[in-house]
Image (tube, rainbow, N blue to C red; front, side, top):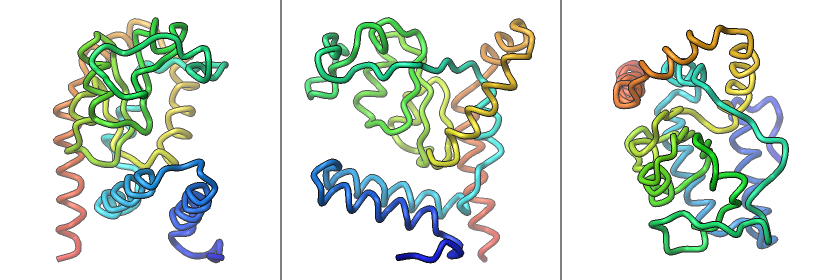
Length: 192
Protein backbone atom coordinates (compact mmCIF):
# COMPACT_ATOMS: atom_id res chain seq x y z
CA UNK A 1 0.00 0.00 0.00
CA UNK A 2 1.31 3.40 -0.99
CA UNK A 3 1.43 6.07 1.71
CA UNK A 4 -1.13 8.86 1.18
CA UNK A 5 1.75 11.26 1.85
CA UNK A 6 3.69 10.03 -1.20
CA UNK A 7 3.95 12.89 -3.75
CA UNK A 8 2.50 10.66 -6.48
CA UNK A 9 -0.10 8.95 -4.27
CA UNK A 10 -3.10 9.66 -6.52
CA UNK A 11 -1.36 8.36 -9.64
CA UNK A 12 -0.02 5.24 -7.91
CA UNK A 13 -3.36 4.51 -6.23
CA UNK A 14 -5.11 4.86 -9.60
CA UNK A 15 -2.62 2.44 -11.14
CA UNK A 16 -3.29 -0.09 -8.35
CA UNK A 17 -7.07 0.20 -8.78
CA UNK A 18 -6.71 -0.37 -12.53
CA UNK A 19 -4.48 -3.42 -11.97
CA UNK A 20 -7.00 -4.86 -9.50
CA UNK A 21 -9.85 -4.17 -11.95
CA UNK A 22 -7.89 -5.95 -14.68
CA UNK A 23 -7.40 -9.01 -12.47
CA UNK A 24 -11.18 -8.97 -11.86
CA UNK A 25 -11.89 -8.79 -15.60
CA UNK A 26 -13.32 -5.25 -15.48
CA UNK A 27 -10.42 -3.56 -17.31
CA UNK A 28 -8.64 -5.02 -20.35
CA UNK A 29 -4.81 -5.13 -20.45
CA UNK A 30 -4.83 -2.38 -23.08
CA UNK A 31 -6.35 -0.10 -20.42
CA UNK A 32 -3.24 -0.49 -18.28
CA UNK A 33 -1.05 0.28 -21.28
CA UNK A 34 -3.11 3.39 -22.08
CA UNK A 35 -2.87 4.52 -18.45
CA UNK A 36 0.91 4.07 -18.51
CA UNK A 37 1.18 6.04 -21.72
CA UNK A 38 -0.92 8.78 -20.15
CA UNK A 39 1.31 8.81 -17.06
CA UNK A 40 4.34 9.34 -19.30
CA UNK A 41 2.75 12.48 -20.75
CA UNK A 42 1.66 13.57 -17.27
CA UNK A 43 5.36 13.53 -16.29
CA UNK A 44 6.04 15.85 -19.24
CA UNK A 45 3.39 18.21 -17.85
CA UNK A 46 5.09 18.19 -14.47
CA UNK A 47 1.93 16.50 -13.15
CA UNK A 48 0.16 19.85 -13.11
CA UNK A 49 -2.75 21.31 -15.01
CA UNK A 50 -1.51 23.48 -17.88
CA UNK A 51 -2.86 27.01 -18.40
CA UNK A 52 -4.03 25.87 -21.87
CA UNK A 53 -6.13 23.14 -20.24
CA UNK A 54 -7.68 25.64 -17.84
CA UNK A 55 -8.60 27.95 -20.72
CA UNK A 56 -10.23 25.08 -22.62
CA UNK A 57 -12.51 24.26 -19.67
CA UNK A 58 -14.28 27.60 -20.14
CA UNK A 59 -15.96 26.40 -23.31
CA UNK A 60 -19.56 25.26 -23.29
CA UNK A 61 -20.06 21.82 -21.79
CA UNK A 62 -23.34 20.11 -20.94
CA UNK A 63 -23.59 17.34 -18.34
CA UNK A 64 -25.92 14.33 -18.30
CA UNK A 65 -28.01 13.01 -15.41
CA UNK A 66 -28.41 9.48 -16.81
CA UNK A 67 -25.76 7.03 -17.94
CA UNK A 68 -26.61 6.35 -21.57
CA UNK A 69 -25.28 3.84 -24.07
CA UNK A 70 -25.22 0.85 -21.75
CA UNK A 71 -26.94 -2.46 -22.52
CA UNK A 72 -30.05 -2.37 -24.70
CA UNK A 73 -30.06 1.40 -24.88
CA UNK A 74 -26.92 1.24 -27.09
CA UNK A 75 -29.08 0.77 -30.17
CA UNK A 76 -27.48 3.41 -32.39
CA UNK A 77 -24.11 3.31 -34.16
CA UNK A 78 -21.37 5.76 -35.10
CA UNK A 79 -20.71 5.62 -38.84
CA UNK A 80 -17.10 4.79 -39.68
CA UNK A 81 -16.32 2.46 -36.76
CA UNK A 82 -16.33 -1.32 -37.20
CA UNK A 83 -15.64 -2.35 -33.58
CA UNK A 84 -18.17 -2.67 -30.74
CA UNK A 85 -17.18 0.88 -29.71
CA UNK A 86 -19.47 2.07 -32.52
CA UNK A 87 -22.56 1.36 -30.37
CA UNK A 88 -24.19 4.37 -28.70
CA UNK A 89 -27.47 5.47 -27.21
CA UNK A 90 -29.61 7.44 -29.68
CA UNK A 91 -30.60 9.77 -26.78
CA UNK A 92 -26.93 10.47 -25.98
CA UNK A 93 -24.16 10.59 -28.57
CA UNK A 94 -26.73 9.81 -31.25
CA UNK A 95 -28.49 13.17 -30.88
CA UNK A 96 -25.80 15.22 -29.15
CA UNK A 97 -24.13 18.09 -30.93
CA UNK A 98 -21.29 18.14 -28.34
CA UNK A 99 -19.63 14.99 -26.99
CA UNK A 100 -17.16 14.87 -24.08
CA UNK A 101 -14.68 12.01 -24.52
CA UNK A 102 -12.42 11.69 -21.47
CA UNK A 103 -10.91 8.31 -22.39
CA UNK A 104 -11.10 7.58 -26.09
CA UNK A 105 -9.29 6.09 -29.01
CA UNK A 106 -8.37 8.04 -32.11
CA UNK A 107 -10.72 6.08 -34.39
CA UNK A 108 -13.78 6.98 -32.38
CA UNK A 109 -12.75 10.63 -31.94
CA UNK A 110 -12.13 10.97 -35.69
CA UNK A 111 -15.45 9.28 -36.54
CA UNK A 112 -17.40 11.52 -34.17
CA UNK A 113 -15.80 14.61 -35.76
CA UNK A 114 -16.48 13.31 -39.28
CA UNK A 115 -20.11 12.79 -38.28
CA UNK A 116 -20.45 16.48 -37.39
CA UNK A 117 -20.10 16.25 -33.62
CA UNK A 118 -18.23 18.89 -31.64
CA UNK A 119 -15.77 16.77 -29.68
CA UNK A 120 -14.27 17.81 -26.33
CA UNK A 121 -11.37 15.45 -25.57
CA UNK A 122 -9.46 15.03 -22.33
CA UNK A 123 -6.10 13.56 -23.33
CA UNK A 124 -2.63 13.93 -21.83
CA UNK A 125 -1.04 13.55 -25.26
CA UNK A 126 -1.37 16.69 -27.41
CA UNK A 127 0.06 14.71 -30.34
CA UNK A 128 -2.58 11.95 -30.26
CA UNK A 129 -5.19 11.44 -32.98
CA UNK A 130 -7.85 12.01 -30.32
CA UNK A 131 -6.44 15.45 -29.41
CA UNK A 132 -5.99 16.42 -33.04
CA UNK A 133 -9.48 15.24 -34.09
CA UNK A 134 -11.23 17.08 -31.25
CA UNK A 135 -12.84 20.49 -31.50
CA UNK A 136 -11.53 21.22 -28.00
CA UNK A 137 -8.67 19.31 -26.40
CA UNK A 138 -8.05 19.53 -22.68
CA UNK A 139 -4.45 18.38 -22.28
CA UNK A 140 -4.57 17.17 -18.71
CA UNK A 141 -5.03 14.12 -16.52
CA UNK A 142 -8.72 13.16 -16.46
CA UNK A 143 -8.56 12.94 -12.65
CA UNK A 144 -7.73 16.67 -12.49
CA UNK A 145 -9.65 17.76 -15.57
CA UNK A 146 -13.14 16.57 -14.60
CA UNK A 147 -13.29 18.51 -11.29
CA UNK A 148 -11.86 21.61 -13.02
CA UNK A 149 -14.39 21.25 -15.85
CA UNK A 150 -17.23 20.85 -13.35
CA UNK A 151 -16.16 24.00 -11.47
CA UNK A 152 -15.79 25.97 -14.71
CA UNK A 153 -19.23 24.81 -15.89
CA UNK A 154 -20.82 26.09 -12.68
CA UNK A 155 -19.13 29.48 -13.11
CA UNK A 156 -20.15 29.62 -16.77
CA UNK A 157 -23.84 29.29 -15.88
CA UNK A 158 -23.62 32.86 -14.56
CA UNK A 159 -21.88 34.28 -17.66
CA UNK A 160 -23.73 36.03 -20.50
CA UNK A 161 -24.63 33.66 -23.34
CA UNK A 162 -23.19 35.99 -26.01
CA UNK A 163 -19.82 36.02 -24.20
CA UNK A 164 -19.81 32.21 -24.07
CA UNK A 165 -20.78 31.92 -27.75
CA UNK A 166 -18.06 34.37 -28.78
CA UNK A 167 -15.45 32.52 -26.68
CA UNK A 168 -16.46 29.20 -28.20
CA UNK A 169 -16.41 30.53 -31.77
CA UNK A 170 -12.97 32.13 -31.30
CA UNK A 171 -11.39 28.99 -29.79
CA UNK A 172 -8.64 27.45 -31.96
CA UNK A 173 -7.80 23.89 -30.94
CA UNK A 174 -4.64 23.75 -33.06
CA UNK A 175 -3.32 26.83 -31.25
CA UNK A 176 -4.42 25.26 -27.95
CA UNK A 177 -2.43 22.07 -28.74
CA UNK A 178 0.60 24.12 -29.79
CA UNK A 179 0.49 25.93 -26.43
CA UNK A 180 0.33 22.60 -24.60
CA UNK A 181 3.40 21.35 -26.48
CA UNK A 182 5.20 24.63 -25.72
CA UNK A 183 4.37 24.18 -22.02
CA UNK A 184 5.85 20.66 -22.12
CA UNK A 185 9.01 21.95 -23.78
CA UNK A 186 9.28 24.75 -21.21
CA UNK A 187 8.88 22.21 -18.39
CA UNK A 188 11.56 19.93 -19.88
CA UNK A 189 13.95 22.87 -20.34
CA UNK A 190 13.65 23.45 -16.61
CA UNK A 191 15.33 20.07 -16.09
CA UNK A 192 18.41 21.06 -18.09
